[in-house]
Image 1 (cartoon, rainbow, N blue to C red):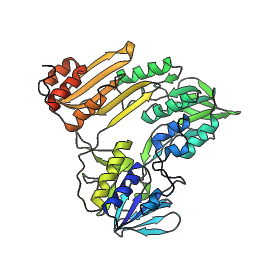
Image 2 (tube, helix red, strand yellow):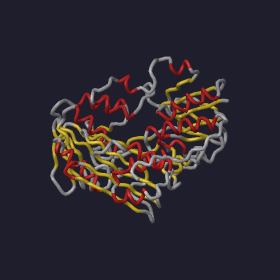
Image 3 (cartoon, rainbow, N blue to C red):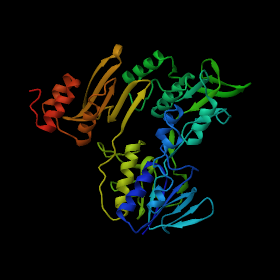
Image 4 (cartoon, helix red, strand yellow):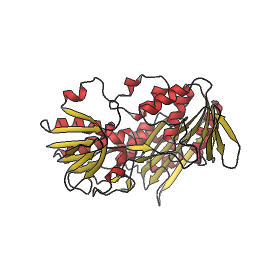
Length: 417
C-alpha cells in the first residue's frame, strides 16, 4: 500500500507513525513545504521567550527518527491533487501516486487588507522563519504593536512580554480572546494585562502602516497613531485548501470529513487544522485548530486508512491559555445552547470566574478564569456527556461544587449528600 501524508505538523507526524505501526510493510511519504524538521507551531512562543532552543520546537528528536521508521520525508509543496487518478503533483515538477492520501496541510496566517501590511517590519508569528525575524528585531524596550488578541495573539503576547518589549495590543472586537471568552472573562484578561504594564486597545482597528524614518507609524481608525519598531500580526489563520481546487474533494472553510475523517473521495482523508468535521456536542461540522485535536485526528485517520475502522466521536473546542500568569480556559459550547441553562459566578477583584452551560442535566460548555483545580473534571464531564441528575440544580446554585458532582456521578461516591 502506498500512503502519502501532506503535512508535517502534529496531525501528519502522528498519522505517519500510526500508519507504520498499522502497516509495517506499507510505503509512507510525508510531504512538508518548509525547509525545517517537523515542528510544533505552538512551541514558537517558547522559542521567542528563550525558554527553549530551536530544536525544542521539533516534534521528534534525532535526525534519523523518520528514516528509522521507513518514513520518507519530502520537502516540497503540493501543487494539485487528482482524486480520480490517485495522483498529486509537486511544485518542483514531480508527481506522486497514492493508494491512500491524508491531507494534513494545516493553515496559513492571514493579514487584514490594511495599507502597509507588506512593509518590512510587519511580521506574522506562524513559522520558524517568522520567529527568527521577530527575535532579531526585538530587544528590551523595543516598541511593538501586536494586532489581534485572539488565542494565538495572546500566546504571542506572552512571548513578547518575556522579551521585555514596550507592548501595545490592538483588537478590533470589544474584548480579548473573543472566540474563547465572553465579555466578563475577556474584560478580566484585559484588566490583568494592563496591570502588568501592557497597553490594550479593544474595539480598535489599524487603518494603515507607514514608514516613518527607521520606524513604522501605525494609525488607528478614528484616533491617533503611534511610532513602533515592529508590528506583529496575529489576525487569524485560514486552512490551506487552495491547492485542492479541481481535485473533486469537497471543501467548506476546510476539507469536509465524516466520522471516519474520510472525505467524499474514496481513499482520501483529512486531519488537523484543515479538517472540517463533526463537533462532539452539536454534530455540526467545525474546525478546531488545536494540537490535541490534530494528534487525535492523525491517529484515527491513519487507522482508517490502513484498514482498522475507527469511529471519531467528534472534536471538542478546548483552549487553555496562560496570559502573563492568569490562567483561562474554555470548553465546548460555552456560549450556551438553545433551550439550555447557564450559571456563573465572578469575583472581578480577584480575577476569578466560572461559567457552566447545560443542556438538560449535562454540562455542554464551560469558561474558567483564575481557577485551575477543576478544569480537568469539567472537561471530562463534557466529553463523556455525564448526566448529573439532582447535581445539575446544585451546580446551578454553586458552580464551584463541580468536583463533588463529578465524584458522585462518576465514582459512586456519596460525598456531598
